[in-house]
Length: 89
Image (cartoon, rainbow, N blue to C red; front, side):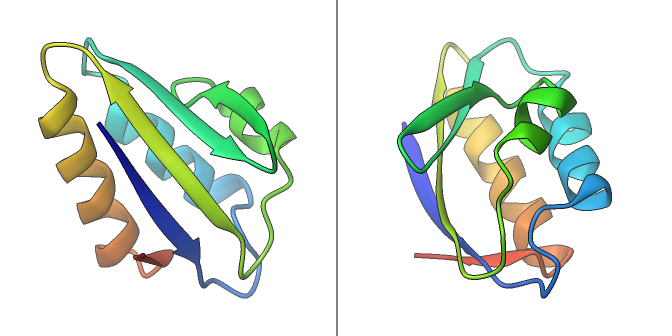
């Protein structure tokens, strides 16, 4: 399962929002990937997420594969929307 998001924060995905996403998905067993600009990283890795250099206006894809993939995507959507990091697209 996957979902696309447009990052709307003026700073992009800097340390704080990246940490929020990593913390949100860590308890789940599914493999969760963040893809941007042709490169995918493990969303459970803060260094991986930060290495992407995701700026404002970027469109990212979050994909999850595993027994709780639906729950993971719902949680990520909740965090991105409630923290005003971006919007689903």
